[in-house]
Amino acid sequence: MNIKNLIVICILISCFNFTVHCQDTNLARLEYTNIPQSKSDNAYSRFGFSGNYPIKLNDKGSYLVLSFEYRFNHLQLEDPIAIDKKEDLQDFQTFGFEVGYTYKMKNDWRFGAKLGTRISSNFESSGVKGNDFRYTGSLFFVKKYGKKDDPIMARLVLGLRYTTPASIMYPLPIINYYRKFHPKWAYALGTPKTSIKYFFNDKNTMQAFVGLDRFYGNVQNNRVFVDDGGNAKVIDNASMLIFNGALGYEFYFTEHLLFFTYGGYTLSNEIRFRDKNQKNILTINDKNTFYIRGGIKLKL
Image 1 (tube, rainbow, N blue to C red):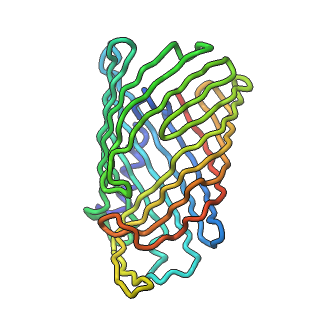
Image 2 (cartoon, rainbow, N blue to C red):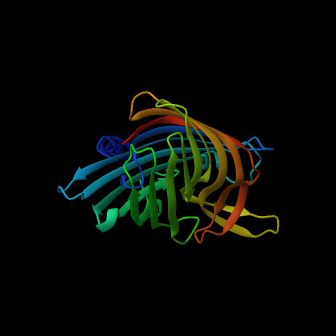
Image 3 (cartoon, rainbow, N blue to C red):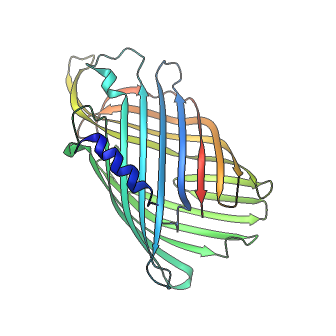
């Protein structure tokens, strides 16, 4: 399939998307991220949008959920790197589509499961290749305490998510406990984000948090890299895994539409080229650095 046609199809699909809202309450999200690399002329930036569309199946709380995600990842490789055509290793795109199912259980518990596929690549060849595809699956259980608008309420999420191929070759846990313990204060503990939030009023909130950020992209035309020991290795993919801390501000235009901006510092910063077995070949950056992220969200 021609990549231009694929982009058009995915944009059309995105008009009908949104994630299992028992954990992710975002109906749509548009954001930009910039991470200039410390002690380097390299930089990482990302533009992305995503959406989730729930389809009601019955009056008992069962939903089918269609989800879409698009990301344009840019690796600005300005430092000297002994790799042929490194300019083709700077832009990676990800198109993702998932189908989820959720239903209510007893005692205010809810079950959710999702299956999907992603196409993540630098698309330097014509069309899509088999190694561009990644497959995802997740399941989780959600327990709610109280109602959304109560002064004090809580939510517990337990689950697992697995993606293959990926830089981390085992299921990642989904463990998160959210509690609004005061009309103006709330916190969340667990993965993928731990935070504490203060509500100034109905329109303005501030939060501090730590969390994970990552990307993965296939290199369609594999490169040979010769290390300092004279060993030739084949670059198969690029990946990033960041653990960061930040302060964030949110402004609500309406009850459901908001602007957000986050600024912080990476606590662990890993951008690498890897082989087909996910073994490290070349580290692009591993120095901690500042970063910014901002955008618009439509929430339930």
